Image (cartoon, rainbow, N blue to C red):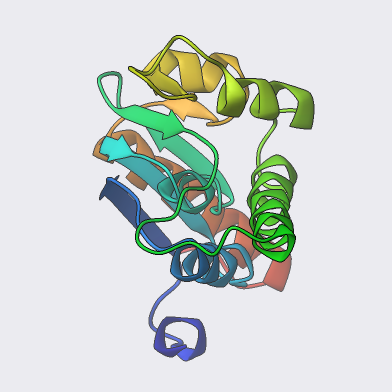
Length: 171
C-alpha cells in the first residue's frame, strides 16, 4: 500500500528466489503486484518454484536468469488431509485459481500450463515440470531472459511510458 500511495516511488522490480509456500499467501502477493498502477517488473533469480510461478508472472514484464529454474506442479498439501469429496473439490478450485491467474498474466496457454503441471516422468516419483530459463520464455510463461541490468532498464522504459501517458514532462 505504501508503494502504491507514494509519489516518490515510480516503479518496482520484484526479485524472486523462492521454493514456494502457502498458496493463499502467494496468490495474494501476486494479486497485489498485478493490480498496482505503477510499472512492475519481475525477475526470477535462482528459483521461482511452485506458488512462486504466479508471483513471477504478476508484473507487467517478467525476466528469468538463464540458469534460474521454475517448478510447475499441482497443488499439494502437507499434514492431515480429510479424504472427503469436499476436500478434492476445494483443491480443484484452488488449482483452477492458480491456472487462471498464470494464464491471464502470461502468454502461456491453459492447455500448455496444465500439461506442464501434470506431466509425469520429469520429477522423481512425482508429477510436474522443472523449467530452466529459456524453456520458461519459449513456452510463454516468462517474457525474456535477463538479469538485474535488463530488469532495471525495462523498468525505466515502463516508467517513461507511464510518465508520457500521464503527461509528465520528460526529465
